[in-house]
Length: 212
Length: 200
Image (cartoon, rainbow over all chains, first blue to last red):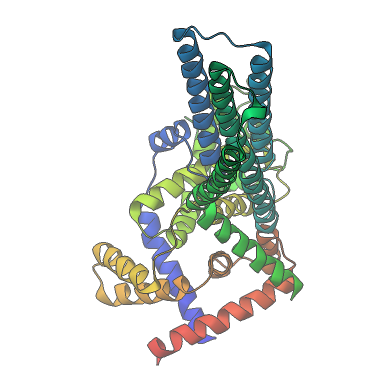
């Protein structure tokens, strides 16, 4: 083991140099405490806030558009929109709860990595499932509403819709759902995929070491 | 501002970390600790133990900018977690635990660079800071060896090189001392394999 003793000696020399080269002052630490962190959970929390802001702006924009077009919503449409808003709020509340129940500093490394893996995995699954359903649901309901308006203007009903038009509508719905699933999956993977894989790998490594 | 020595911090054994401050302050008041006092005590603690954080940052990052970011993240996590230190563990053990948790679970959006790029970059950085070519070569070798290890193994290696006991490593990592021993033996074998061409 002489080579490893040699490594210990090298490490001591290196850390002594490191200590002398990097001295953080009180002012630096105070500045650090005012800054925000770059941890995964904090980043996701910030992205939740951004998504909520975008949704809020879209809601305001949609409301303004309807008002400017002098469109009146019937009670059924108001109920649908309310349900949609409630679903969104519940989704974001659940996401926020799932993320913030984990404290990466609370336990030892194995405990922290296992909780983080569970939290991130749960978050990604929830995000994928809900958005795969929610995005097509809202878009298809918009499509149906538009179609309904067109039918009403022409003095027709749903019974008058031809099988070909039904086939197109269903096809668009399926394509939209598949596309949104792929898009959400790509977005999730691009944002958190590498990080999740790394956390999973480290947690598995510790689990294996524990079972050896 | 009153400064605190490492020994003073390490000797705290009261349940709340801030309550320890009063053991070294003159007994002037029993008023609740103000945010200012708390942050002053915390700052003093970080200054006293900054070498520990630098070591963790040095082993887990390659670029100076990443190193600064990680240092800041560790400081922020220590600040958030300060209530969790109950004085049951040594202050340094608690700090290593938080620092390693933060470093290993930090956000990674891109895959790690290939090994040879890591080493080239490190070698360049080390050449800038170490005028002694022999020491520089040895340090590059040290990092080359450590960079071949996994994130978990790097942490364990650092604690081992810092001469922590198996019990302390076990407390930080979360596996039994026996399993720490097994893991260290595996790391030693890996390091021996990596280092043997250089040493021969």
